[in-house]
Image 1 (cartoon, rainbow, N blue to C red):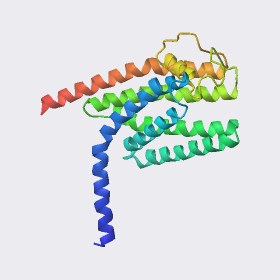
Image 2: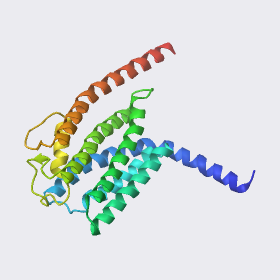
Image 3: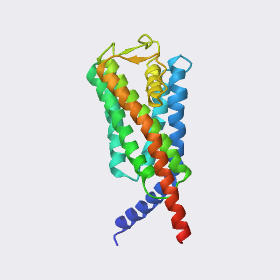
Image 4: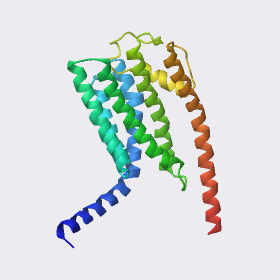
Length: 240
């Protein structure tokens, strides 16, 4: 065998072994980073207790953890990398030439990354196998991703139509964090609906309805799937 080919095979085996060992710890790290981003960093930045660069910095960690989790799926990892490049280009161009197009470019990258990650995790969460702690962690990440996905959509709607929501703080008071729309997204996902922020534009209302439906159906669907998996595992264990 050619030495270069043999070296490549050896590297490939080591990389696959690393993927197996890093995937589950990477999922735990992803959950911690996402919780910190959504419920600590973004709200604290919104009230000025953290600098404006804190959410982008933590988001970089989120992307790195996402790459670890999706590394076994070459397509998903490629989509995440492409989305990062797309979003970065949008942010850089927006600094000198702010426009709706650059906002859509940046948001499109975030939506693509969230979607790719969610598909990979959904396959692991709802796929066959025993119910483990990491499967539950994946389900939590998937649920949080719904809120993050709709948060990005609400931001786009708000950019395109200024009066699409009522109850939002004045522009610039949140230091670019979008904390109020993040709060609205998760209060809608959990069907809490406190009513202090309301969608008034038709598309915003429809998105809120869709998010509320997903938020209500997902826990029930997840619970039913986990119970069926555990019952199936118990039957197989008794059969053995």
